[in-house]
Length: 107
Image (cartoon, rainbow, N blue to C red; front, side, top):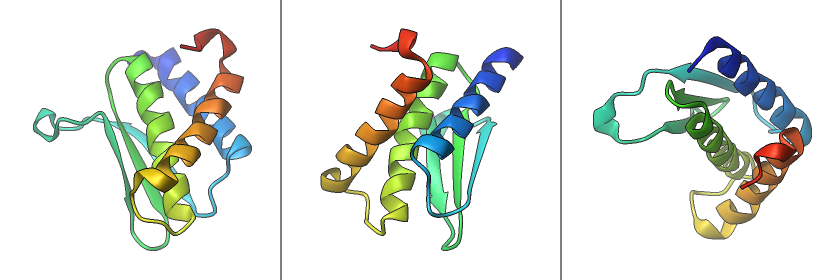
């Protein structure tokens, strides 16, 4: 990912924090994720804060992954497990916030 794309991704993080805030502290990092894990990102929760890791790859994939993981973070903050009944609506909130951030990028 290029530097300007990384900066734009972090602007999106600030936008998500403002539009669909989390009730727990969150750290978002672009990092190398081993290919053997076969994932573009993940969210972890240590009981007090969240950590979102996004694979250092294509910008468009990083954005999709960030929005997806933000949905998981919203579910965790609401006190629910990882299940479709709660994830779907929270992911939709994060996705709509992303669309407001970058209306030209709508799919």
